[in-house]
Image (cartoon, rainbow over all chains, first blue to last red; front, top):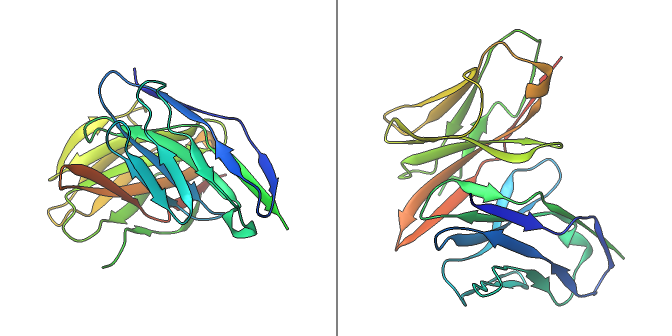
Length: 111
Length: 114
């Protein structure tokens, strides 16, 4: 069945450092891919998404490219801020079916 | 426009009781899905409703049920609560727009079973 694998956290960075959170997926079809962010005590907020191969999603300085050949959707940001500290979830949805999430990666950014 | 509204935000129940959670989707969205989030199991899909019909169901026991009303508002019910049902329950409202599916989540209901 479909699945998502994320790198284990926590990821600890200093402010202005470069961020990469790895995400790979397994899917039988051609899923849409998502990154969601969850701040303490809150629900999930959509960070970015991509619906087909080679699409690049971007938002608030975060980017991820849908790589079909490597079945990956890694999240990157060139310069993180303390306010980016949160838990990040990679997810997929196959043709509008339910969202399947990775386990989440906690990011901690220190000044 | 208003987002997804989940009520209540927090709930404390005793083992064996039942509980009902509510979700009001974004206006015009006809699909509502529910997810359970726990530290041990992560985010797991419970079920999805579309136009008052359950369209998809996750792997949860029959104690978990839901329904959707004609105005697209949805409720989920958990009967005979167990300690392991303590979790954050998230509702997502979704629509098919321009060949793409968009999901918007509410802030969740945190259920504690004691």
